[in-house]
Image (cartoon, rainbow, N blue to C red; front, side):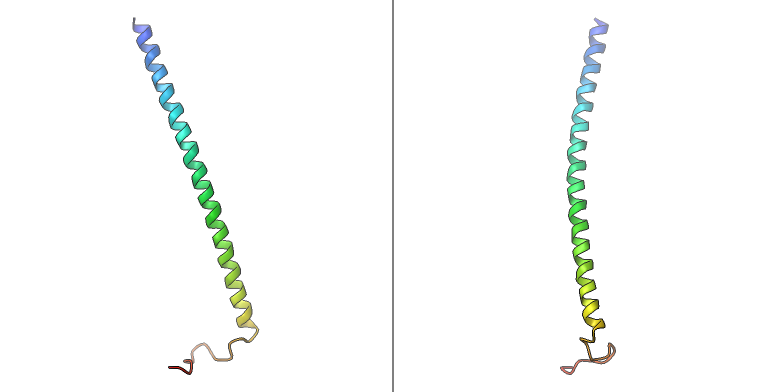
Length: 72
């Protein structure tokens, strides 16, 4: 009788651990997708900043940085 209780307890623990591992795998997959999305967004922002810096270095802004624009 004790062996069957022990066996049942072990089966229950294994089932719980298998469920837990499955849930962790799903969460890790979601986190990986989110990280990929954030990396892509960061690269796009970096490209936009580089484009703005390139325009600025080409003399697109003739006004000095500390001078107020004419509409002030």
